[in-house]
Length: 204
Image (cartoon, rainbow, N blue to C red):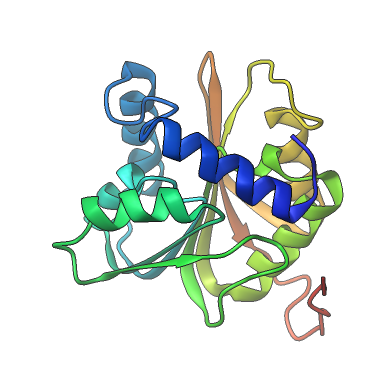
């Protein structure tokens, strides 16, 4: 996959247009177990406003609504968002927006930001940029959750490398982590190292 934003958007639109569930979010045991582990890593917290980056067809989004008062899901693919809208139509505390990070990032503050199997679709530079954007947007007592497939892939960045780039680009505090045979989950919090310091938001 090329790093050009328009190519990325077209690639994922074509993917979801040809298969509404390309990774088996609805039926694969791996996906169900990973969602269960994701929610367990957030237990027992409840969140006022959550951001899910790369919400795809909304399967994880639907489960996040059980622990969040409001959820904003963003995705690069309009085709994926159309599927998510159908799935989440009855949930009035969910908003969906087409956006391509890091060049498009939502305004406001969140007390939960979730990146589930999305970071390695970005370049090294983009991963560092979204880490900075997440830092700026996360409430002081908020949670940033990284879920990464750790097996091989055909992308320039693998899950382990993506996690390291994100976590080491800023003074994140690793509050908890879990490692499974095919994926890992990291619960990050902000430290006070950069509190009060200005951080310039990257531009396209």
